[in-house]
Length: 346
Image 1: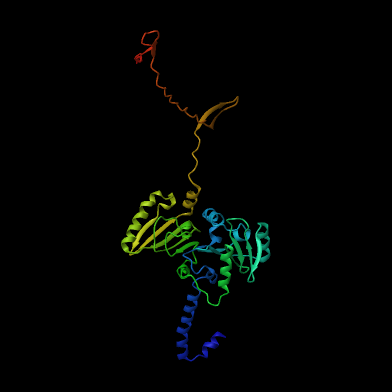
Image 2: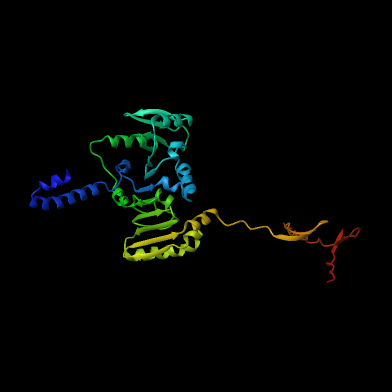
C-alpha cells in the first residue's frame, strides 16, 4: 500500500515531500523533548531533580537516596510509591511527581493503613497525611501521582486544569538528561533542594549535572559563573576540597572552559560498593597453638586475646602544708614559728 502511494506522487511533489516530512519529524521531536508528565512541575521552580528510581534502587546508591526521599523529604511510606519507576522533584514549594502503578483501590488501602485522610479535590483523589513532617499524595491517573503539602497539591491540580498553563524554563534544560539515572538542574547554587543532591560548597549562576549508576558511577556537571575569572576561582576552591571528600570522590576532575566549571568523575561498581560499605574491620590477632592427642599432633590457629594495657593514673600530690610551732604563755601572747620545708633525698 505504501509503494502504491509513493508511485502516485509526481516526481516534483515527492522532492517537496521529503524535506516537509523531515521538518515534521524535527518539530515532533522538539515537542517531545521531555516526558509530558514533567509539565506538572512547579512553573516557578528554582531547581529540578530527576531520579530513575527503577534503576537507582538496584544500585549501591539505593539506600542513601531512599533515606533522603522517604526520610528528610517526607515521602509517604506506601509500598506502591516505593515501587515507582521515575521521580521528578521541583522546589521551592516542594512538589514531587512519580510514575508507576497506582491503582485507586491499592492506593486507597495503603493510605488508609497509614492513617491518611481521603478526600477529593476537583475530581482528583487525594490522601492527606495526619503525621507531621509527612507529605500528602494526589492520584492523577493509574500511572501518575503527585506528592507535596495539601495546598501545593491543590495548586498543582488547578494549574493542570487551567486553559493558560505556564511551564518551568528548567524543563528544557533538563530534557537532555532523560536517559540518566539521576540529574539535577538549578538556576543557581546554593539551592535548598539541589544542595541535598549536590553537596558542593560553592556558588554558581546555574548548575546542570547527571549521574549514571547502573555500571558503577559516571558523573558530569557544569557550573556557570559570572565570568571566566570567577570560574577560575571557583575551580581552585573545588580542587582544594578534593582531599577532604570521600575516597570515591577524590578522583574528581575539575576543568574550566570560559566562564564554566566542568566536573567529571568515574568509578567502577566495585569501587562504589567498597566506598559505601566503609573500611573493612581490623582482624583480631591470631596465634598458632600445638594440640597433642594420643594419635596425632595438630596446630590450630586461635584468636589471641587483646590485652588492654592498663592506663597509668597520674597522681598529683596536694602541696604539703608548712609545719608551724605555736608557743603559748608569753607576755606578748601566743607566737607562731613556721619551719622551713624538709628537703627530700633524691
